[in-house]
Amino acid sequence: MVLAITYDLWAFVSENWRELVDGLLNTLKVSVIAIAGAFVIGLLLGAARAHRIPVVSQFAAVYVEIVRNTPILVQIFMIFYALPQAGILWDGFTVAWVSVMLWGGAFNTENFRAGFEAVPYRYREAGYALGFSRRATFFNVTLPIGGRISLPSSINTYISVVKNTSLMYVIGYPELTTTAVNIAALSLETLEALTVLGIVYLTLVWSLSAAIRALEGRLALPEAR
Amino acid sequence: MAAPAAATAAAPRRWRRLGWLTLGALVVAVAYVLVAFVIDWPDWVEPIARYILTEGLPATLQISAVAVVGSCLIGVALGTLLTIQFALSKGAIRSYVEVFRGLPILVTVFIVYFGLPALTPTLKFDPLWATSIALILWGSAQVAEATRGAVQSIPREQHEAASALGFGWVGAHGFVILPQALRRLLPPLVGLLVNIIQNSTLAQAIGGIEVLQAAKSQTERLTFFPPAGIGEIHAFEIFAGVMVLFFVISFPLTRLAAYLEKRLV
Image 1 (cartoon, each protein chain N blue to C red):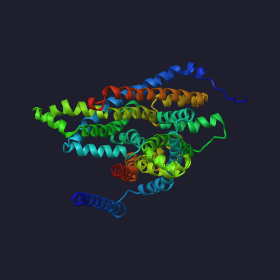
Image 2 (spheres, rainbow over the protein chains, first blue to last red):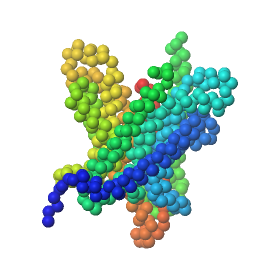
Image 3 (tube, rainbow over the protein chains, first blue to last red):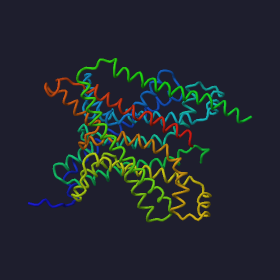
Image 4 (cartoon, helix red, strand yellow):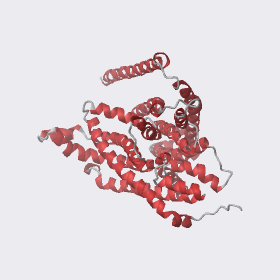
């Protein structure tokens, strides 16, 4: 028997759509949790960095440099293979969202720090002159302006977070990439599986980039309009 | 009055930079003495470190070198062509850039390693080359986008001056526009180098033996009983070592990129 090279995308999808949808849902679940976590980490540590809060700021700097200067795959391996040595044994789902959240959090710390530092000091001075405390000035002046400045770059980080969930293939967590590649390994429908992966990821990434462009116009600072 | 003021402002900065460099050199020297002479490493460390550095590191560097050179050549060419206002070429290059910037790099690696041979058996690459090619597809898209911006940031007068000197499109871009654009391109290119070195670990996912796969296989070997291993788990130590290795390579490069960005822009 000769294995004919056939390409039938519709048959592939109609046979395997249940697994593929489960995989996509896992991808989205991990992405949403990781993005929410990365947002919180970035906001807190970014504010600490921009305001040079002692200890927290230095801790954040070390965390950012470690994450930015080591491959995310090694970070995933560290959490998946090395933490159990210390008695911390997590399932694939937890490893997935924790690792991409820590990665996105580090990049988001830089995004928010840059955004907060871009707020001119005279704006903060104006806040102090109105009798605002440091905290009130942050929430009423620095955060609304700096947050808007850092929004495009932080959405870019979230896009990378979504893309990086595909790396959970190396720990076998059944998100979209793992699911599709495993189906292809059994059925030899490699091209169909890769087509599905390409279409789904490009749809996700392109719609997020479209969101950036839409938000950029709406959230632009009044003076920049 | 302005010149001496600028000079006195620049001098402390230069001294501070010298201070950081001295501190860096000192840290490296102390670390070397500690690693080589002072710390009493367990017996299993030396062969594993040797294996990772002699089998893994050259493969990582090979993937990265091929990917960086390929990305720069293809990316600069595509980015320059992208500035031509011709719908067909513009549309084609734009879609190339958007597709390979949008796909997760791991999916691109799978497309090259599994997809191309399924298409035609002649396009079969070993894992290291497949990773390089995937990184070129991704990296050239990044470089093309950066090059487009850099080329368009060169003022119109430069184009006019080049044509006044009798240069055609190719000559004007090759001798006048690109040399100026490259200055602005340098920081993103150093950033790309860091990204490519880190993403070369993706070869691990398709079984290429580079630093990460070398470390993983040695971690697994140690867990076997003698004579193969020692029946112990040392995943943390080994992967921490891999992190240190990548950090030592990447950190100076990210500092360099930041320094170049500050100086050139």
